[in-house]
Image 1 (cartoon, rainbow, N blue to C red):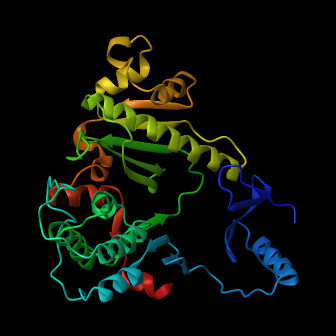
Image 2: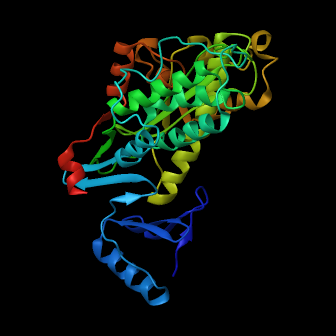
Length: 349
């Protein structure tokens, strides 16, 4: 039918020119179709129905556990129904809500001497919650942190996971809202790390998030693969991780739009990490760092990415690297755009 498969995301297909494009996302036998021209969508659906036995369920409202609310103000994504299912399975629908997913600065160990619990039950809990992360950045760090204890969980670990469930119960209608912002083609990224946050391995955690215009579109929280020798080194590794992720995002967006997109800007709160990224003669402090982490230098030199310093208090990726106190956590949650999705919006879906 003349479609081209995306070189950067294999399940996305594109047809047409820059101002006349039709995009299709494929998951097994389910399709998401979008275009600026409704007529093109109808023509495509008619062609598909001739070739396959297909059903048209109309405007997208539910896909792979994610609820989609579309109205004149924009599009909202949330997983209220899925979250309610998790709480019901664990008999926690009437639990007392928690204000944050984890206690502030909480540190747990794989060598906990507490009473061991059923690992299958614990793993099922973590697996269920991990799928909720698709629209709930606010629990990403907590779920990733608690995933480290699935081999031999104890009561201490299980109680912390139950606190995450209590937090989900109190914010069950929260999700992401995307307003209508035509022509937005610029990414802004935030990257952060803790230093030696894992008490068992002394490895740090990287947190990255990216906004397309004013709206959050991508995030991750993951343990670094090497032990950093200093806080600036862990920040430097996080910056490189963010660079690789956002280059993929910007290239995919350029491919889908059929035109060049704006240069990506990374916000880093560590001046030493920025200096290391920009200075090729920083040998004494950087010669031990693995070569792959110097990728960020090439990105800055060829100007595919620009990096700037940001105050630690404005570093939004902090929510992905450590457990925060109530006021700081709620402030960051509001900044990233996670909000209560009203019942009227859900009804429209």
